[in-house]
Length: 249
Ligand SMILES: [Zn+2]
Image 1 (cartoon, rainbow, N blue to C red):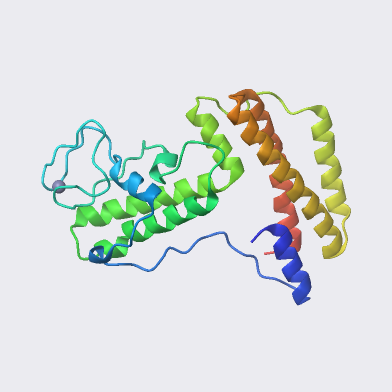
Image 2 (tube, rainbow, N blue to C red; image 1 turned 45 degrees about the vertical axis):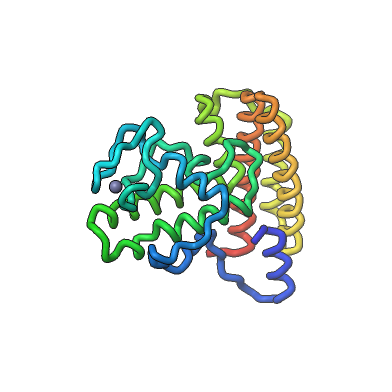
């Protein structure tokens, strides 16, 4: 739930205390490997386009991997293959390597992959497959957590381009003054309504920032993207404080 929506819901309920929502997504119910769900196209591409490192043959039947590696499941014997930790997380979730991505499609691919690779599916399988399914599930979760949020997605994209955080342009003194002012407003805010005003402003500013980051990546201006992501980090940390005020743990 977006912060402002959460706030409105909290106010509407007039509840004195709203429990903190976790972002954790529950994975879908386990399914038999014989009843695999119909797969969305991006996911199908992810599953068949080389889930494994090149040169790693199937551990069970020895099928040759070829130059692009084996997919998650061996095409010859169907055995789950070991996870490839070096794999690009965009490719893992069947998405284009871009800051602009389709959130709904990303979430769908994530949920379907989690269902397909869920350790429960391999409870009666070989021990190797059980271990691999845990590894795959952890990788898919980490990839989704990273790519679903604009800040971590942007930083990951910069990393893929070989740019480390802090190597880009610096944030301006004017922006830092703005951060200071927002922090002061939040510290002085009394009641949910006043905190809510800060939350709305933050949400609007973060939305505009995300669009600017997208444009910077579109234009290949990585230094600018780095600065905008630093700005996003500052605003996100204020947003965390807003959540803490609204939904104290
Ligand atoms: Zn095989």
